[in-house]
Each structure stands twice: as structure tokens, then as C-alpha cells.
Length: 365
Ligand SMILES: Nc1ncnc2c1ncn2[C@@H]1O[C@H](COP(=O)(O)OP(=O)(O)OP(=O)(O)O)[C@@H](O)[C@H]1O
Image 1 (cartoon, rainbow, N blue to C red):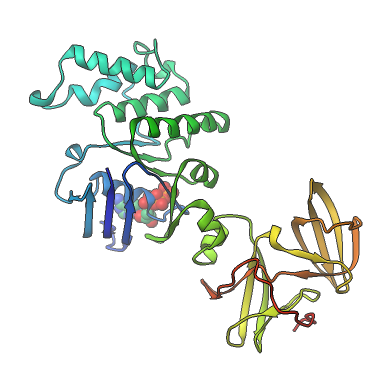
Image 2 (image 1 turned 90 degrees about the vertical axis):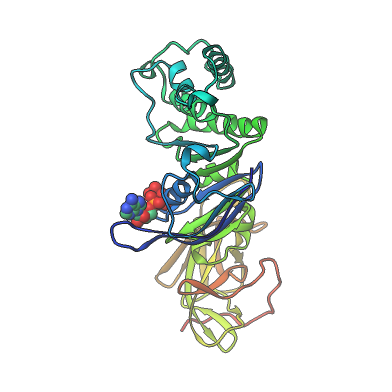
């Protein structure tokens, strides 16, 4: 089932400020979407609006093309698992899983034998066979989260909402459960939306990533798209390592404040600016300046360099130039593969890999 959000607004019940601010998002049927972003960005709030647990003051939520704004949570056919959505401690694992079915209105409630069959099926699917009679405190953290997932899936929802479901697990279990979850998503043909802080988790699991900040979706796309063509400096920093190099635009050139960084063409008005660049895109140019680059560590073709000019040092990891000695004297940096920012936005969007015209070496401000 697809989920479509159209200009959703939710305001804080306390102070009327927008918590979700004009969010439009389409989650395709059968897709796996990760909602990522800093704390307080509105990810949980958006998930709760989709689930129908919280109301919204503007916009519409549609599931499979039908508006569900006035449909209560129980009737949306959505399963959800929250990090702190605890299991019922006094109930066995089997009773926890079957709970959603057992409280259905009499008309739609399956018989006891049918519930038992469904629970057994889910226990097997979750690799928890034989654990139905245990109590939650007799399980590991990873097993408990799988029971929570089983409970969410018992009513056969087609949409699954997961809010940091693995946050409390140790990293090894977390990685194992990831692969297993993706597999489950495929096998059951689910449409899944996962809230996570973990960039790696989002990249591994999701087809689409929606990055949120201040109640808005800043950019949606594959992990690769967000990394390669970030909509703004915030997205670039969120999606990978970035080095910021301050400078200015001077008559069509970006001139770094730090000497021995090559100026390059910048199609923008004169003023302050900053280059944001992935460390791996920085190029060391031997015999092109007066700086010194000292190779601190190597990892295959990649080296960690301290690039020193005057009293300033820049540390970054990049490709070791062919035949370079561990200490390169008289070198300069090429940062023309970066993007130039001013405040929260780009002042110029450059495509990486496009050759820049040869320009004179910067001599600083
Ligand atoms: N019921 C509420 N009443 C008032 N403010 C709320 C309520 N729920 C959330 N907020 C506020 O809305 C903003 C978004 O919160 P939300 O929990 O959705 O963010 P988040 O991106 O999920 O953050 P985190 O990653 O820390 O869980 C925060 O500023 C939060 O304080």
C-alpha cells in the first residue's frame, strides 16, 4: 500500500508552533523509506500522524489513494513498533503476539485455534519458535524487539512504521536484525517507514531516504543521490564527512583564506563564501605551492594528511598521489570538486568531476 502525505502540518499543542511543517512525501507501495534527521526534526511526530495516533492541523494523509484523515488508528491497517513500546510483561510471548487479534470486535475476531495458528506462524517467521510460552524478561533485547515486530504484524498490516526499533540493541545484534528486517519486508510485501538516527542503517535498509530538519523534509532520494547532490550544506554534512574551507568570491574566483589552496572558478557575486568538500575529493598537488603535506597514516591508496601552510594545518584523508614521499614539500591543494556555500545554501552548484579552468594560485586575502 502506498502512503501519500500532502502538505501535512502539525502544531505543538503547547505553544502552537509547527512540529511538522508542510511535509509532502510519497512512499511507494512495497518500498522501504527511512526518515532521518537530527533530534527534534519531527520524525516521530510525522510517523504518529501517519499512524493516526496524533492529529494534524493541515494537509491530508492517503493510504492507497484513499484519504484516512478521519479514520482512527485501529482502522488504518498499519503496524507500528516504537523503541519504548514495551511488551506486556505479565503476558507470555504468544499472548503478546496474539493480543491485537484477541481484542478485535467479535465480528472480525478470529477463533482461538486460528489465533494460535497465526501466532505459531509468526514465531517461526521471527525465528522465535519454541519461545511462545516464555515471558518477556526471559528474552534477549533482540528477541524482545522481534516479538514487538511479530505483535505489530499479527493483524496483517501492509504498512509498517518503525520508530528507532533497534535503538536499545548492541551494535552486533543491530546489524543482524537489519538484514533480517529487510528480508521480512520483501517476503511480506510490506511498505515500511523507519525512523532512525543511524545513517548507516538508513543506507543499508532503505530504498529512499527522507531527510528532515525543523519539521520539514529537506531532501528525498536514494542514499547515493543525497550524498552526491545534496540540496544544501546541511544535507551534505548529514550524509558524509565534510571539510569546510572558508574564503571569498573575488571577481569570479573562489579564493580560500588559507594560502596554497588553488583558486577556482566561482560563478557568483563577490562576497564571503565557504567550500564544503568530501575529504576524498581533495587533491594534493606536488610542486604546485609552498605548503607541506605530512602523511600520518595510510589505508591502502588512502592517506591521512596534515597539510600545513604558515601556522595553519588542515587534516584530511585523501588519495595518495602516485609516487609521493611521506612528506611532500612545496605542495598545494585543489578543492575545485567542492561546493561553495553561503550561510544555509549553495551560492553555486558545481558538478564534481567537471574540469575547472586553470587559475592562478591563491595567495590568501
Ligand atoms: N506532544 C507534544 N507536545 C509538544 N511538543 C512536542 C510534542 N511532541 C513532539 N514535540 C516537539 O516537536 C518537535 C519534534 O519532535 P519529534 O519527537 O517528532 O522529533 P524527532 O525528529 O523524532 O526527534 P528524536 O530523533 O529526538 O526522536 C520537538 O521540538 C518536540 O519537542
